[in-house]
Amino acid sequence: MIILTVEVIATSFTVTLFVYLFTGDMTLSALSDSLAPDTALARTIAVFRSLSSHGILTDVATAVVGFNDAAGIIIYVI
Image (cartoon, rainbow, N blue to C red; front, side, top):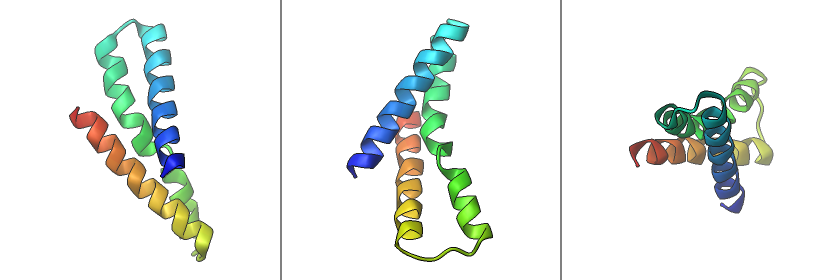
């Protein structure tokens, strides 16, 4: 759970900061902020599925991605 929290906060903060610095648009940076944690680990799950991977690491990574998606939705609603 600590990994998830740190990853979501770091991803959100970094995306918000850089989008705002490059565009100067706070609305765009807030929208990008809500989408960033949601897509961070999706490629990893795609690789796990394409390789039909099984095991503890796959289970943990899948759970983290699921919680990331939930956190992205919560951030978007806020």
